[in-house]
Length: 106
Image (cartoon, rainbow, N blue to C red):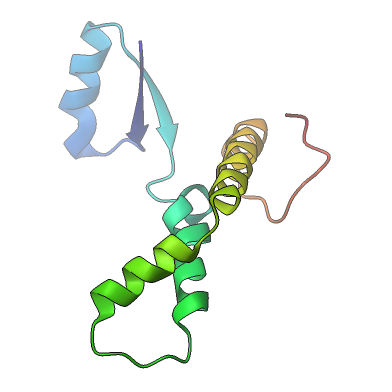
């Protein structure tokens, strides 16, 4: 069994010991990576693009309309790109990289 975890800290020591006793492999990852968060690299920018320059009284209904305006295939493309990002992150062994890095095998 595997579990994702943030880098070790004194707070996490007892948790790591418990997981070790249960023979659960802990996979380390950065505390936060906006490149791997679809809301940060796709959804929020898309909504901002749709709502940019507009004024309205009801932000909730306008935001919902903006969400509904995003085509289904855009979401599909987002998740395909997200998957490529996972593979790039794994191939780089968690090291920082920029751009597409087409040379990394997926």
